[in-house]
Length: 303
Ligand code: HMG
Ligand code: MG
Image (cartoon, rainbow, N blue to C red; front, top):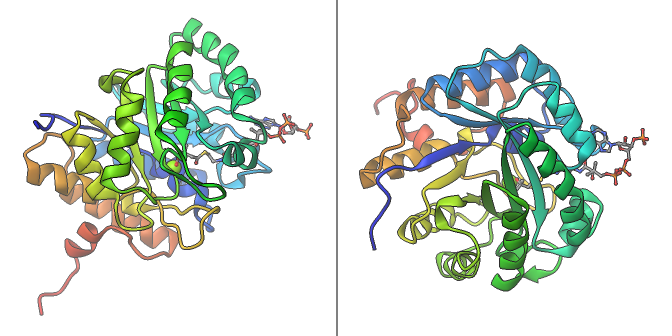
């Protein structure tokens, strides 16, 4: 088992994190957050989503965020687009990547995007074709890859089938989401093995929410299997409206600390990340979910 030499972090805090925060941030603060995250060395960042503002009001201002953002060259600025309407809205803001999102669970698909899995894939097809014409990178998400809040267990074959469809449609990368954070290393390895029959490991990312505290263990297991792209959120922002007590994504700081300890390059400055982490928690008036950020608190007094 050899670990990758470099891991690409995809920072999803400004989207997956903020979409679940009860407090809404202003456009200026969202831009500041994204710019500060980029200054830590992060090179791939989700800035928002073009979904229905009735469904997710926290993301209603993504267009303004994308327009007001000071961009840095070489950084991938990604946005979620659930349908052609979302894609057309996104195009006016020149993202570097768009992301479509499907689920491995029918019930979750219905509740999240109001259609079946097959209908969602049919929606994505023309959208991905248009994105390719515009030479945009396309990311495909699969939610509920190890468990669904409504129907429980999900088989690896269900996930593999959706991954195969997204791959054949032309997704450059597929992110495997443990949306409610119920996975463990064994279940995740089984799921990944099934998916890897259809999609090369180099085109796969993992996306763990940390509800049951398994995210770091799962990430380590995935690194051992050859995964080298990991989604994270600063300060572990977010939550999941579909699972009681669910937490946000695994914290970026905790993953960078793990990578540093393993001697894996991420080119992200951990101490700067910690400063951003405390700053955003202050803005949102919420506790910091990153254990590493708490341990490295700049104002922590020695006992
Ligand atoms: P719908 O109600 O079925 O849509 O929602 P519709 O096509 O019937 O249209 C209804 C109305 O919405 C119409 O307006 C449309 O124009 C409008 P009206 O005529 O009533 O005034 N509409 C839109 N407006 C703005 N932008 C759009 C858009 N589309 C339609 N793109 C829809 C279907 C997909 C839009 C809705 O269900 C939705 O927005 N869902 C998004 C939910 C969401 O954002 N969930 C979180 C992201 S997924 C996630 O977090 C998981 C992930 O992190 C991975 C993991 O953790 O596993 C990615
Ligand atoms: Mg998520």
